[in-house]
Length: 616
Ligand SMILES: [Cu+2]
Image 1: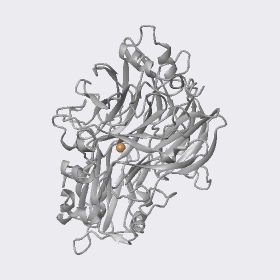
Image 2: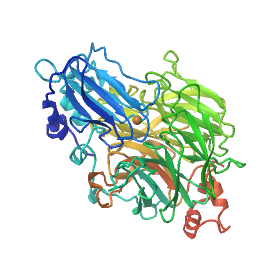
Image 3: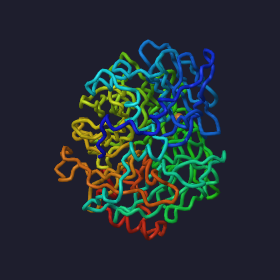
């Protein structure tokens, strides 16, 4: 892990802008426009500075613009932090396009983000009479108190925020950009391939339907050798490619489906050649894709939440192309659903995190009937109920049966908790803290930790949930000695048994078969150019306390024009074969029928009996 200290920071290009002094306009006059963009590390781009950081005077106005110039989907502009005593408010109960204006009152630093894409961040500095932006205090941002100080210069805070990194120089300074010397291959091979959405990788002349350059590739790692075997870009997606985010495959593993989080599209990709076969519009900001494993008329149908809308879309993969067959709301009102999961084995229930439902971060978790789309139960955040109070921006779900009970784990961005749910009885079992403040304290919210739990899949053998914890800063902390980590939860006790340090921007996790038995957690890191491989139980004694990273695989492969972003942005990760109960058996059942390619037949042949039929 890169060691970052607070003294390091003043050379970053964005910091120099603290000295910028704007002309003196009338009260409330617009002095800058920040466009929300699809550009990694430059998600809010100031017209004055070209970065997500701008400096103005009290009484001046900044316009936030959401349109096709710079983004292909909808967003919110949400004020998260402001100087003590400021009366400024800015938030919306739904994602939108258009312009939102903020007139600033008191000197100090104001932090904004998007509730749909929580790592889109911006800072507006308002100067005092002497022309300086006052310090950020621990009253404004409790995180600072956990560093043992009561305030820090705004420039110092800005310098450690990894989500604000507009240039390659900023990314090299703040992110973990490794060379091949960092690579460690696990002693034991995996089986198959690992597909990674390297969402932030720049691709020369890769344009979306609006003609604007958009980032993102898919990097494919051969799990037998841990070599990068292919990189796929979206230049042949007919403009329907922008920040590729998460993937799933069909049962024969001939096709991979991909969603574009900053666009409105999904793609069907030929697995063996990497060719994009078909792309369609499904709606605003599609996130994850999961196929229905339930034997019946909808087996193999794709389910896709729209995070800048309210619906779960169903898409059938027909010989004539991808076709939308259904769309159902994922709860009451405006829901903004993100990373769902279907129940292991049967797939009859869909567990959906509804990220926010109004002003503020309060969200909900729905249990839907997969076939009908009916919401059977919606757990709505209630600050007075200890079980639902942590449902603040729930964003991703993992699910599997544990000792015969369908159990879901839901990561909540703002509370730092993973909510455990009994899907059968539709009850919340409890909430598990997974984040760390800079002094090592657990159980605190994002304002104390500047960390957010994201993907949290359950291992196919039911033993572990692995939660990716993304840090918004590069500030290391005990006991991991790292800014980011993966929390390993024992599913029988619902306790965290290990915290495994990981590179910057830990975001995605999914489980793949380990050769000879067991599973690896493949972990993506959006602010690094590597894939991390975690063994949850290296000595196989059933105790996960020894969970450890056993591999670090370089995803940068020298792509022309990618610069510092080569191999970065790792978010969705899909190991093939798909290992979970319900999804692996249909693939195994196709073995010997002529419907699997020789390569996939080879993978199936390497699976152990338990891996071919987990949980039985
Ligand atoms: Cu957004």
